[in-house]
Length: 420
Image (cartoon, rainbow, N blue to C red; front, side):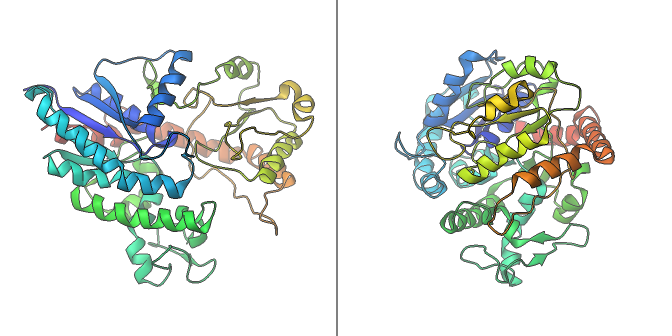
């Protein structure tokens, strides 16, 4: 009998691909062969980014791709079109791929299990047709996962509308349990998209993935750690949900090939010249689109702080082909700030924190003003207790993934089951 062979399928977004790639590397260290399945579009992006970086290429990880159902020139940030394609086109191509691998590969090389992003839960139905074991991967907080799993309850309790997930009473606050902090329906992630149509599509997609995942998976492995979200894991109260995080590549040699943009490593030299704990890091992930006015206000707010900052500005962050910084911005900030298209986000200058942030309040025009940005930065950096809590959380996270830690033991449970 050969090595266990896992197929890994991420949601085609940067924040989903990278942690799943780290999971792939950890599974390889436990004896797995990995086939990592990207879309054609993202596969090309990964290849184009790789020549500028030094990666630890692992012969046990094979990269392949399937169509996402969109045309080459289509906007992959258009949520409505993307999610429709994911559910109607990709399943056919995934099933064709799995069938081909099951019938044409030698017995010892055939896939034995499928690990798919929770948002790609339609894939589990495909996997079950071929007898593969299944587990889902959740790359974000357990709190967000819990809000999705509780959609039926929120509908039944009359808190949200069943057609689009919006609040039945504007601004209503609810609690899932006495231990979990209260949540505003307007802040649930499916209500935070660019428009009502996108909100509705994502909400309905969540309902569908709930159904598929609940029916088929043996485990949900979560990129969180128990100590960070104890009340949530107590509420979930399920042996199927395993926190194994945080999944960061910085604690092992080499990097996973999961980055869509070429990382601008010149920022490291600039950071080395700054005082310890003095730099503001600003980034909004791979999908967020900022209103042009809000983008300008953010830039001016960073300028007003008078503090050094590293700001990741994706080429498409405002939805335009060219990003326009405020006139004279780069001249005025000089060497105090650095703007890059993408940075090495898992290097040592970045650490995971939890409950150590400050809430921004939009004004009457739904705008976060430059003055508020300045004031919140000053409040955040001036709060010594907040920094202490962040360091405690960092140390707790490291202990969790080290031998004997909660995440370490959960990961062993997961891989030992998938190896059978």
